[in-house]
Length: 91
Image: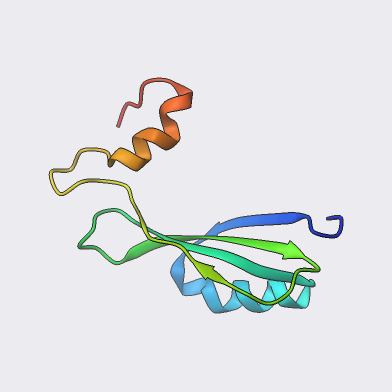
């Protein structure tokens, strides 16, 4: 359903990364950006964000991880910026 150069984004558990990369390529969607999401800096990632583009050339950019909480358990600054447009966060 995507037009040429259209973007497809997904969010999955890290165990499914290989399956997601393979499925995107089979659907003629080239993986372009990958970012892991961690609850805290000292924890393993619990999600990944992946963007694919239809008809794009091979080249994957791995972006810095997204941390949801600071060491003190408060929402991370980047998370506050992401959700800042949606009003006050209540975590």
